[in-house]
Image 1 (tube, rainbow, N blue to C red):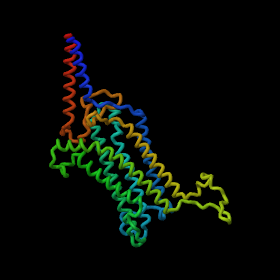
Image 2 (image 1 turned 135 degrees about the horizontal axis):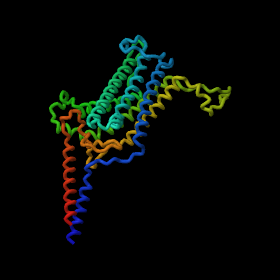
Image 3 (image 1 turned 180 degrees about the horizontal axis):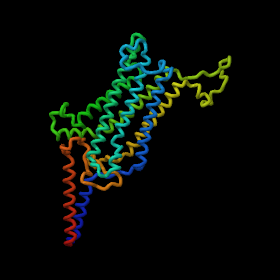
Image 4 (image 1 turned 120 degrees about the vertical axis):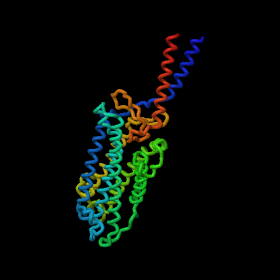
Length: 367
């Protein structure tokens, strides 16, 4: 009976320790890691198609005569406001492309997969630099894109145009506001620049707490802003095509009835203005890009929750554990002198579990 009671107690203790998820477990995704890399490469190839398409689009005659005005002539375009405006889609779509690089940066752990000797902390630091640099370039493109549209609308030589009157402009304003809030918070909290910014007087422990609180918000917020940016760009393409006039004429008889059937749509493909056709494909590439990024993020399992809302960096598939396998990404460490708050708790739980297993083995040997 005493042995049975000891076994029951050991089982209860094991059950309690099982409830404590010391290590995050890798969830199964619907795609393999190699497939994920193929999708990421396809996404970047689509980004190249998007950039090529938008430049081809703005150089069409229907786009205000085609071409771009030199940036230093924006303030005195001398009646060439339409070509100043052409910078707006170029810069905003470039912003979207840089956002794609930024949002996929933590999925592109090629260095970690290729070289097992590379420190995971060093690899993560490189990915963070890529992430932050891409967001910075995206922010710069967004600001320049806003300047371009206001400069074109407020050119007296070309005729003044109302600002922020369309649904596209309202959505764009909201998206850019959210974008800048996300950028400023991320720049302040998840980098070591806090030494010269508002967080310079905050201790590392408090800053790590801010990071652990904001990270579960920062990640989904970035994805939602990305989706909203994609939708806003599609609205802008639709609005511009409305100004161009994409409809083609259909022959009619004298009584007003259709002389030629318009049911065979693809037969009239060439009747659609070339600028509209390019705009259509540009929009399709934007949709494809959004779908590819969504697949990667949905199946991305390198960062998981360990049950206590503490995100940890898991080792790549097929790689054995090392001493730095468990790395708390809530802290966003670049400076290796900073010490994560939660990492000590994880190590303590590991020691307790190891000690409990040793005691259990000793009891079994005694029995």
